[in-house]
Picture 1 (cartoon, helix red, strand yellow):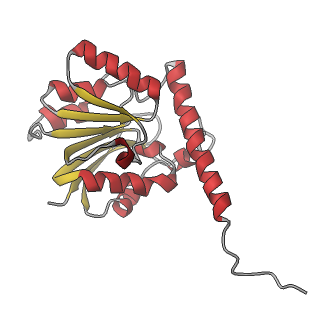
Picture 2 (cartoon, one colour):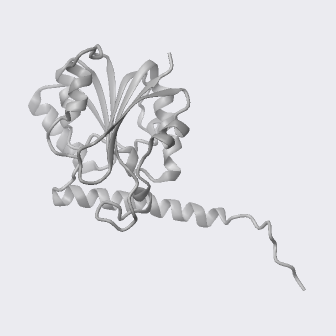
Picture 3 (tube, rainbow, N blue to C red):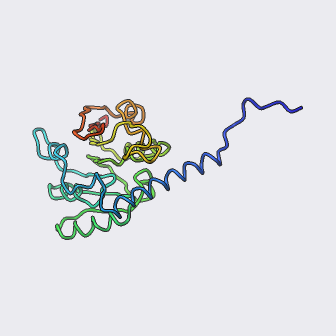
Length: 222
């Protein structure tokens, strides 16, 4: 009689299929937000946290910036208007199209790319960059792609580069903002410490939203 194999290996094909399905679910959900015109992160207003970094006391000097999940381009255009050389990426084609129209109307130069922020090598984004800006992109990425995101930024970070990230904290699965499994995980300071070796977490500031949100500021080691 055959004995059960206690050391049976996981079915890699099944895991890959589940991961692919997760990525497809995220893509469909994001498309749905833009199709309905209700993407909560795309308000048309540049957040004061980014304004403070660009214009406030001890502001960063203009350099090269990469925005991850740029939506319809509000913040990429803001950075370009303040002297930054900007590349911006978004997964949703219609959002990138709107961003191009807005950048053209604003008469600013922004390199806008349609693609996956966790697959920057495929998009021809060489770096180095002095500033990375992420408004709700990372916290929406499936967990199995987050190390690739972190590695992509680290590879393209100039010494001392900053990453300013806004993200949702963990929430129970099934709430109005967590219909995707990985979205329920949100993002935490502990996770960023783990996934971003070679970066220092300078600041964690709670957001003002009705659900848990945070602003994270990281600096690449010199």
